Length: 209
Image (cartoon, rainbow, N blue to C red):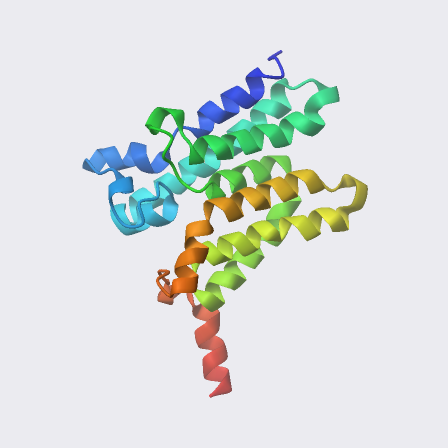
């Protein structure tokens, strides 16, 4: 059985395996030198194309799920209630500050989704629709991600005693922190927008017309 300290440490090391930086090497590209400078799936899509970006997302989601799995497999039952969220958050931190890549990584959203899929699957039933609704109306990936993360908090509160309120607050706060530059660019009118994703905005616009 792994020690209580080893589980978050291994989760952090898993998180430090960056999908965009690993796959970017196939083309001799460091995605941090292009686009937004972020080592995440959205910048990988802009820089590497959709095929490699899909691989990036699979890696980043997978390592979050694997980190949560480590806690489920090896954590003592009496400590699982805190080691499971700790492992997920450690993997997200590893993605953001990867020890293997000079502590310059992504923003942690995909890795958080992977961890939630194992640690708190009910959260995906709320988080994903909120993200799709926000991206479908506004077209801002960063804003959609922040709103989706914030939706974890009311969900945890609604669950009552079984709701991981502390974990939801930490996860939402972390995502808000890593996306603070997106908020700044939105205030300045410089945030990139995916117009093709604004399906709901176009649909509502036609109905009004």
